[in-house]
Image (cartoon, rainbow, N blue to C red; front, top):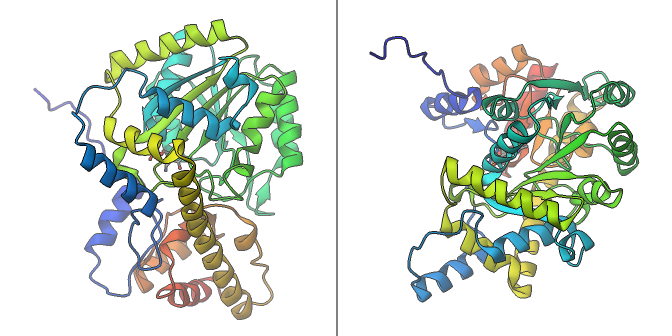
Length: 397
Ligand code: PMP
């Protein structure tokens, strides 16, 4: 009966992690998966989360269903975090927001909505992008193409090519953008470049879909929303998917949000109702636990400030690892410029290693990174950084 079912070989990054787990070497290092580890190599439980969790245990609330679009306090907190506290779009009711199953769920519900109401729209993702962007949009029935982004020659952005590319797209095309901490390259546009890109997007009547999964890991919680806020400021309708997987270290709780900034509150009401309908048909209502935890952290000034401090501890640790990697490589191979490791933002870095060098790192040193040369900086710590930097220098020589 099922003999014609096609085997799904799994996600390449997750398969790499299976290989890593089976590696018996004690010196092995995991730089593959996009998870933040602390300096002891553990996924942290943030102190601000622990505090709220103990309150929840104490209160012993029933495990009731949430509304289809999630807790109202959670939805409001997401809007404020993304757009700023008293933003006009929020106060005038122009933002439709639902709680989602992580950032992935937000992307999928957004894609379903686009497919249903704008069936002609094609989506454009950066070349390269997080692989699941393509799968999620295609899974919702949307045709996906790539826009020029990363330039291996400059380890920067193919900015002129990108601008040129955007100008020839059909009106209503969806442009999937990473407002900060681009995955997988770590290369972000400057504010001036964002201004130019968003102007083209506006003039050509394209639709930005901003996927922010690393808010706070780039510059800070506010600055990382620059592109989102600028897009809203110049009057664009924006789709925003956000995730608390990384910046609250709540990976398994599946907490994210989808917000759509609409021209009027009446349109936002219609959009909100359709997002709810999409949720109803897919999974009925979101998980409650993460929603309660996050809304409490964000809604209380003291716990918000505590969270902010903890986000910056994670951000600063990643930066420290970037600097150390740069120092070792620059000393060992002085005729090559490694400053890109410091300029890149967020958890990921395109190392410039080719697939053969990545394979050597794995087989000779037990250092695992994605075949395209992407490494997760947060897999580095004070115990393995020298080992990894020296191994990288060896394969780069
Ligand atoms: N967008 C990007 C760019 C990501 O890197 C990720 C996580 N790897 C997600 C969305 C999805 O996040 P979540 O785990 O919350 O579904």
